[in-house]
Length: 440
Image (cartoon, rainbow, N blue to C red; front, side):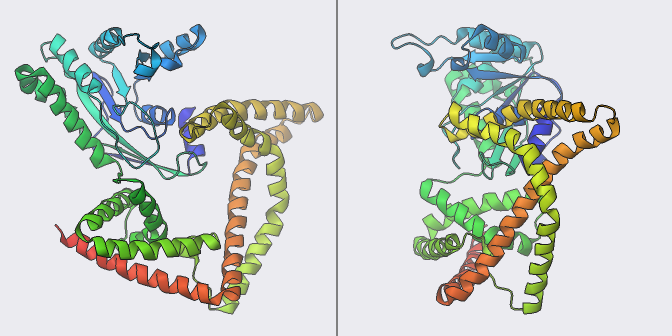
C-alpha cells in the first residue's frame, strides 16, 4: 500500500543502487533525515524483508499505539526532551533490544542525525549507530557479520504533492573491518566507524554550507539545470549527480573565486526576481517569434481545455473532498512543514479508499442492477483524478504562456533585460563549469 501511495504522491521516485540490497540481516540501514516519517517509509519499501526501526520515545503515547509500533518492530530510543527535567536518560534496554534484533538476523533502520529538518545539510552524525553495531559484534566475538547500508535521500520539494525523490544506496560497510581499531581503543573505533558512515552519506546526498548557498543552489537549479542536462545529455541517475555537482561547484567558487562568485550571484538574483514577476521558469521566458506557431499552440490548447472541461468538472467533483481532506487535517495536526508530506500521504492511504467505497455504494444504490456501469464508475474515480491533475497543470502552463507574452508586450525593457541576463548567466555558468571540471 505504501509503495502504491508513494508512486501516486510523488511524480518521480528515482532509485539508484550501488550494490544489490541484502535480503536478510544482520543489517543496519542508516540514512539522512530530511522528511520525518516519510524517510523510513521510503527506505523500508526498498527491502524485501521486514525492517525494524529506532524511533523517538515521544511517539509511544498510548498502549494501542505502542502495540502497533511493536508490531512494526519499532524500538524506542530516549532523548533529553523525552524524559522529565533532571531525569537520567537510560537507553540500555534500547541497546539490548537492538543487539537481540541483529543477532536474529534482523534489518534495523536508524537516522544517525537524530533530528529531522529539510535543509541541504548533513547534520552532525551521532555515534549511537556505530556503538550499537560494534557492541553487537563484540558480544559475538566479531563473528556476527553486521553490515551498514548507507542511504541518501533528496526531495525536490518534501511537502509538495507530485514532486520528485532521489534515493541512493551506497556500498555496504562491514563492521568487522573496524575490529582492530575497536579493540585498541573503543572510543576511537566508534568514531572511526561514525566517520566512515558520515563520508558515505555525504557522497549520497546534496549538501550546501549555509542558507545563502542553499538559496543560490535552488536559483541556479531553476535557471540552468535543464540546459545543463541537455548539454551533457544526462540520464536519470546522472541528473542527480549533476544536481549534486551544482551544489559542490557553488561552494568551490565561493572559496576559490569569490569575486566571480559574487558577480554571477548578483545576476542570478536579478534574473530570479524578474522570473518571479511573471511566475515562470527559465525554460519558459523566450517569446515565440513565429506568429503562426503561436496561434496554432493557442488554438490546440484552447480546444483541449474546452473538450476536457466536462471531464475535469466530473473528476473534480469526485476527488476534491478526499484530495483536500489530508491537506486540511495536516494543517490542524502540525505547523511543522517536515510533517506535512508523511501525514498527507498516510491520510490519503485511508481517506481515498474509504471515500471511493462509500461513493461506489451510493452509486450502486441508484443503479443496483447494472454491475458493468458500476464497474466503469469505480474505474473512473482514480482515472478522473489523474486527469484533473493533468488538466490543471496544463491550464497553469497555458496561463504562464500567456503571461510571458503579455509581460513582453507590456514591459519590453524588462523582458529584454531578462533575455540578456539569461544569455549572460548561461555563458558565465558554462565558463564556470569548464573551470570547475578542469580543477581535477
